[in-house]
Every structure is written in C-alpha cells, then in structure tokens.
Image 1 (spheres, one colour):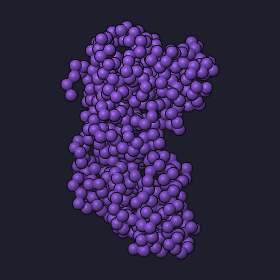
Image 2: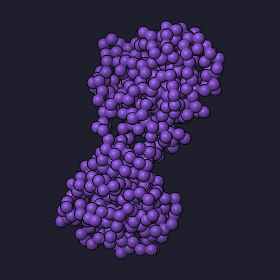
Image 3: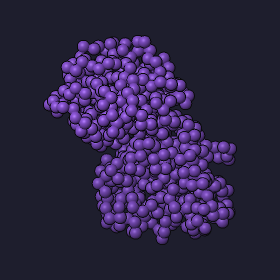
Image 4: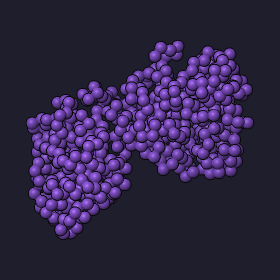
Length: 588
C-alpha cells in the first residue's frame, strides 16, 4: 500500500513447452490550498487522453464487512498508534453522521460497533491503535452500556459517551466537545438523510469545521445555540431545498452568511462540494458508494490526510460529471472505500481510464468468432502485453508486483489448475486487487492440446484422451468458474489455446461456451525456454519497435521475464508506446 507521510507466432514445440507454461467556479472562500503530494512528482507519458501521471495509483480499502472496512481505512492512514479513537454505530447512521470532522479534529480514526458488541475487526484495530481516549457518539438506543464497558478496557481513561435527546443534540454536543473555540466555517446538512453530511464531512474535516444537522424545515434549538457559540464567518448549507428548505437557510442567515452547496441528487451535491472547496492537484481523494453510509463516514475522518474530497459512485458506474471532476482534481491516489459488493470493479476501472496511462478496458461486445494476432485500425500508440500462466510460476508474484508498481496494464491467461495452487492463488490475489490494471482470459484447465490431444501441465495424464466436444467445453467452462472465483473478474470472451494450437472446429466449440475470441500473438518472447536470455527477451519485444496493435506473449514463470521487463517497459515508453491490455487496445 502507498501511504502519505503523516504526522506520525507460431505454435510452440510441444515437448519443450511442457517444461514450463506452453505458449500460449468563483467563490468567496478560496479552495483549500494544495498540499505537497507524498508521492514523488509524477512522470507523464503520452496516452489517448493526453499526459497522464505514472505516479497515479488506485487502492481499495475494504474488508469482509463495514467494521473490517473501517479498520482497513484506519490502518492505511494511521499506521501507528492513536491517542484518540472515535466510535460510532455501524448499524444506525443518525448519531454518528457528524463523527468524521470530529475525528479529523482529534487526529483520530472512526471505528464502528454494534449496539451490543465490539466486532472482532474493531477489537483488533483497537489493540493495534492502543488509544489513550475513546470518544463514543450516540446514546444508549444505539450503543449499549455494555459496549461502553467493553470499550473502556482499551484505555486507562475510559470511554466517554457524547449523547443527547436526539441526533441534533448529539451533533451539537460533539461539536462543543471538540471545537472549543470559534471557527471560520461551519457545515450544516439534513439530519434526516445521510449522504450530504458524509460527502460534506470530508470538506469540513479539511477546513477544520464541524458538521451540524438540521431538520428539513426548522433549525433545532441545540444547533442554533451551538452555531451562535461557534460564531462562524460562513455557513455552508448542504443539499437542495428538497433536503433543507429555504426557511432553514433564512434562519441560519440570522447567525452567519449562508452559502448553499447542492445538486440535483446526492451525486451532484458531492460534485458541487468538491468543486467549491477543493483545488486541483490533490494528493488523494476517495470514492464510496452512494447507496450506504459506513465507508464514507470512516473515510471522511481521513480527509485531512488525503486533502481531497469524497465522491460517490452509482452502483457500477461513475455519475455524470464525475470523470470531469476527477480530471480537475488530478489526484496521485484514488482510494476506493469498500469491497466490490459496495463499489464494483467497473468503478476503479473507469477511474483508471480517466487518470491512468492505461486501463483494463472493456471487451468487445461483438460475438464474431475470430482468431486475433494483432489489433488493427488503432489511433493511439499501444501494444498489448499478455502473460500466460500454465506451468512454472517461480517469480510470478514479483512480476505482477512490478506491473502494479509501474502501471503496466496486462491481460493474463492462466490455466485454472495452476491458478488454484498456493503460488497461483498469491498471483491471482495480486491481480484481483487491481482490476483497474488487469484483465483475465481463459487458458483452459489442464493445458491440453485441444486439437491433437496430449500436452498437459503440470501433468500430462488428464490430456491422454480423445479431445471430444464435451471435454473441450469442460476445459473452458470448468476453468472459468475457478478463475472467476480467484480473480473476481469476468473471464469471457478471450481464450488462448495451449501451445497456440486450434482449428475451426475447436473455435466453434469454445465459442459455444462464451469464448468467441481466440487470442494469439504477433511477438513471442519464448521466455518459457531456460536457454532464452534476458537480452533475447528484450530484443524479441524491442527490435524492431513493435507496431501499434501488436500483441506480445510472455509467461509469468519465464526464466528471465522479470529482469527483461525492467528494460522493456521504460524503453517502449521512451519511444511513445504504451503497454496495455487487449481490451484497452480494442477499445480504440
């Protein structure tokens, strides 16, 4: 994980291939001043959308559930111990929705509990953080006294509860507890819906401002009293009149000048907040689902470290206007908050497409049955880098780490039998963690020659049989289920025939189970052969410079592949070429 510095062409010879893998806007308040990125200044390369930074990264902070996700966010941004920890309910958002700016003011993470227990992930993170003080937002209706007793065990000073007659009183009390003096700005959002308060929470955190809540049609007495005590020079009112009506805005204006930040929906409001408060060239920003609150609540506490906004995703896509805002922000890192069930893999892929030098791409929608050695008709300088994974895997995980660190988008073709080994699962885990960079195709189960029979890796036994249609189908279908489970990605429509051997009948059979695209290659590094040197691999790719649309074949267990990549990647980039996936190339 990258952390900010915080205060703390031809078929291969069958017998030789068996030894390895086979072939195969204006405003009265200026935007927050940019903070120097923790990453080294980015090197820019040419890509389809202009200059892109090689320092750009996407990191997903997730866990098995919201409690584990909050713990993961805490670990990323608070790698050491923390004097304070702020606790909120993981079941109800009402009392805890204002927790982010409170935690940010204290330099603390936000962790979650249930009403009656401290979940294991939260307990483990408290063990690691070793807090001296714990601040709990919420009354007994959301967090029981039993949990307060349990939480007190982690600190010598015990856990302090901030409660009140309702969510408005809790927010006011939390503000008074932590924001003890006056403030430049204060944020107010509806206390009846959560999205505006959470995306606004990141802005409030960065500006050192509290988040207070209001009824849609009136300002609660506790909130009005707290705002008068805070004496802000400006109040940012979040959401449109459907969330907070004009009467509330007028009442707030009796306390301080009011500026409403809003959009047509929660997604547009998040964009409006980002555009108003945050400048360009952010060190980082966060993206969370617009359908639920926990990850955005935990993330908002860390905006003082990312110095960027929280934007919202709409299921498996980016809402209208988000791509333009990402470009304006130009972050070095985009943090995806929550797992694929909350933010599906297409979201980081679209972020990478906007900000990266390459992306995983989107496979073609046409179902034409064809064998492809090269992509023609492209308008950008790209070549596809592909890695087969069917036998020897020594050094494979290190190759994938190099691809991640250097933003080399790649198409992988694993056999399922090797993918489901201990080495293979490590490799597929690395690939699964970065769906924005990688895509996975099908290389069958056993690496059999599907035309002539024989072959097989790591053993030949399963392939010593007739290559019937049912067997051929099972080699693709059975492999798909394993590869999809291990990678979390769709596998269709690409397959690569073991040893590069196929015929029209095999193409027809595999197309019937969802694989119409037989992916071959136009440059073969022959890195499966131990006699092939590092320089041989370099020359095979670079001499002469490959034409746009070239598909390069290498192997994850290649004897010198890792060393060769360290020359191939920067050399191609110096020549204006981008290594990417088949799908990214096909998209052009």
